[in-house]
Image (cartoon, rainbow, N blue to C red; front, side, top):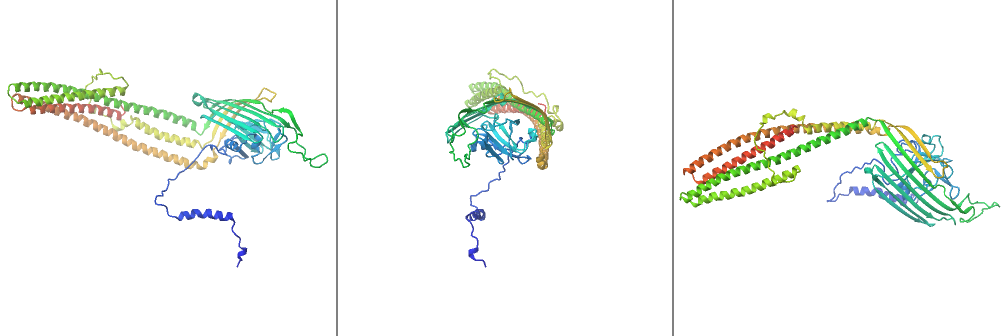
Length: 632
């Protein structure tokens, strides 16, 4: 049996890890609270550059292909803008000190070089163009003008021609942003270090097709050396213009003036002449040149233009054009549908006004009849044939008639105002609609077979185009997994102040081939999903087509019903007229009283109004039927 003294005691780290692992298990067995609820699953997906991150999705510096860092067959380190800001990496030497596999070699205060894989890095790329500055020129540039800095370790023969075993430093300048952005930064540090940065950019004109960005920085600082001072001015400006969808024009200017005094030349010796350590203080004046002012780089100007023409994009160009044309057709059909709805509403308001005018005519006619009855009743009362009560009944009916006339006139006025507003004309009280409710067409004169009418419906055409759109979307998705081929031409111009010539220009004609190998593994699932969406679109099209057929049949049934209502209302009106005539004769002969006479008049008015409503309703049902059969 082992002795307790020989049993290893758990460390604090082991105890802490054990507690962390046990805690979730303890909570898992605990009962949920009464008011606890389970939240819906939230699925988060992302595709694109990581905003404010320390990495990028793709890089082109090593191979000129849009590859991820995992897919790039070389060792690449990317220092993003966010990392530059967070760590205060103001100069290129600061950045190189953070790159794996690169050592910073400081010869003196101004001459700095970078060593990778045993060789000095002499290849520098700016915006993808190779620049061999030589010596210490540009090797400690200010980073405020760059969006990111990429370091490729090892030979880069694909992008620099003759390979260099050390590596390449690729600096990507800032570009104008699609939206307005403004930022500034103030830094204060030891040795009198003071630095101010400003960054402004965004769209300028032509709905964002012209964009600009301006970056500026000012830095002043002393050093641990007694007389060394730095006074640096940095300015960078760039304008971008989208001349066409595939042609980008850039014009920029860069100015850097790192003005230094009290520079050193060489290094302070470590050993004395006697072979012993010299033990010189850090702030020694040895090897200093206090009176010398040195600026390695003053200013630079650059411009570039690139035009790319896709030749083959997996059929997406043709499919995209078809999809765009389909979108135009859909918008046109929606416009036709909107216009048809407006016309239908216009017809409804129009026939409402006409029917109200017809009712006003009926009311006027009934008013004339009522005035005649009142005169007869008044004469009979004066002759002592009837009571005063019968005359009052007629008078009350006249008052009701006047009130109905006022309501009807106000209704016509309001309906006319609404109609004028609907058709976009100013209201005119003198406006009169001279149309009548004469029925000139029977339903059978406008009948159209439902299957044939369906082909004229814009809704049916939209359903067919929705299925076609899903098919085109599937073709586009398949095209994303096919190779892409393009040809292009570009030109770049650089002019650095330290150069003896007037500038350097490079032109190139290139072809690009992109094969999305890494996306093939998920292509089958994505395409299968698109096929499901196609089937859903076909099912929806079939269901809605059946609904359209039902709508056409319903409109036909309602049209026939409205026509029959006219016949019934007309027959009822004739009977009411006959009833009024009989009651009038009987009243004159003293067979019926005045109440029967007034009731017969009210019945006639009611049947006339019902006939008017039936005719106006038929007019609207006729327009509706013509609309649902694609003829209005």
